[in-house]
Length: 226
Ligand SMILES: Nc1ncnc2c1ncn2[C@@H]1O[C@H](COP(=O)(O)OP(=O)(O)OP(=O)(O)O)[C@@H](O)[C@H]1O
Ligand SMILES: [Mg+2]
Image 1 (tube, rainbow, N blue to C red):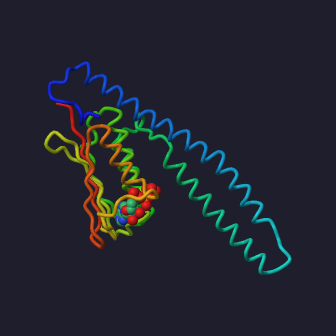
Image 2: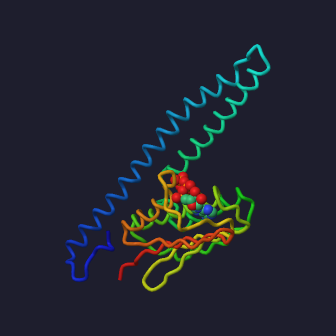
Image 3: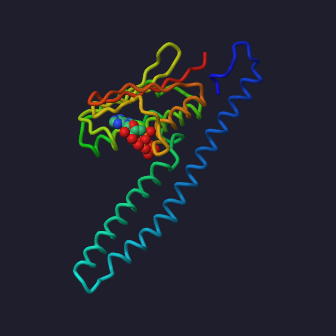
């Protein structure tokens, strides 16, 4: 929203826009919380019951038994996916931990999971930021790191932030598979599109540098107040 602020726009209009942006970001977070609870409590519980049932049924033929075991395995995998999705949708504890420590946690969790080294330099995130800016940067780091875990197969990851030309830049980089950056996001790929939309809302910009076999760098730039 701040991108749309024209030079000379009066302070009241600026303040109004800022309030609206803050509200929009807060509403998105409320929706995520609701979805996270529904996934965890309703879907998660139901899947657990189905899995229990499937694991306990014994058929009178070996072939049927094998198929039941396969179905039970698929339901277990689905439960893990639902659990992961509910986990990633939960609210960030930025008020308690601060943005820097929260993003450091995300990075070290991913690198521990992948068993690879992580270069982290997030000193620039220690400065006070507006709540909607901090939340947006947190969600961007989360999606970029989730993408690395899902798609990149890297041997090294780096997460850094620095101030640059009155902008704060968060960089998430991996040396993994990379991808064809020209491919338009499809309806099944919401992550990168969501990052762009979130950043645009606070007057920021997303740049993706990638090529097949050459790794991926995600730059999230946000303007800093004068
Ligand atoms: N760090 C990365 N390394 C390799 N490929 C990536 C990376 N990040 C994104 N991609 C590729 O870009 C595609 C689009 O990413 P995007 O986050 O938009 O969707 P997604 O991760 O497939 O699904 P979701 O909607 O759950 O995020 C991915 O499917 C993947 O092929
Ligand atoms: Mg994604």
